[in-house]
Length: 156
Picture: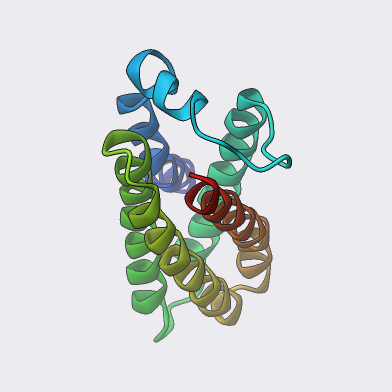
């Protein structure tokens, strides 16, 4: 039963940044702002973002669960700290971009987020190889998000 609650806890934590998206939906005033921006031709449909982020948060939750359940080790504190920093940056990007409409600030946040995600992936991999691999899709998507954000800054 303890494993089950640990898994639920890891999932809860991993989906927290996504909860900030609910505060700034891409409808109404935010939708008008976002829709009026010039985007990359590679920008996917809105539903793609929902599906991808749902899967990515799930993978991050499984990775965190594996780190929590890994044998005690010296790097787990660093892994937890990086996971926390990545969550704050992820939520901060949403707030800066959709809440404050600051695409340039969100670009900087996204660049830092990418660096932290890569660092987190490396630390996770040293603790649990599978956990490290589970972070890879997040790193790749964050790189794509950085590109999309950069194009918005450049075109607008």
